[in-house]
Length: 87
Image 1 (tube, rainbow, N blue to C red):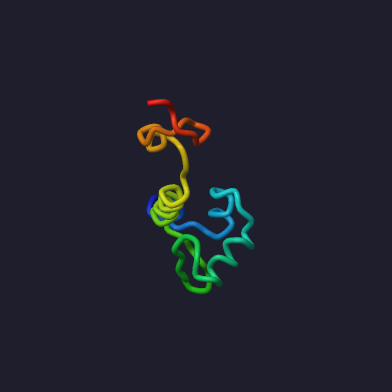
Image 2 (image 1 turned 90 degrees about the vertical axis):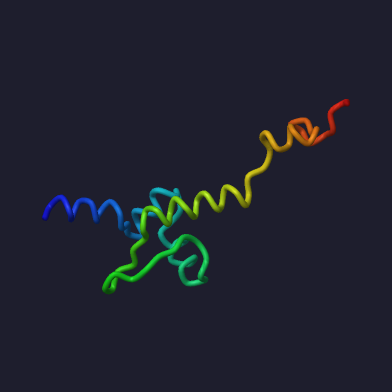
């Protein structure tokens, strides 16, 4: 029983735990939930919980949507400062 409880505790996170992982204020997560943005969350009784997998997926989505630079810029012939390189 204790193993199952520990496994669930690490799988389903509180708002405060997620805030710590994302380095955001808990109030920010509450606001995001109110606005329907941010990572998926659900109610477990009267408490809000987040699945760890949903947090990881949301962070990946944010990365994919907002990342700049890197190999794609290099492949397009742009230098790190955004200027075209000599051909």
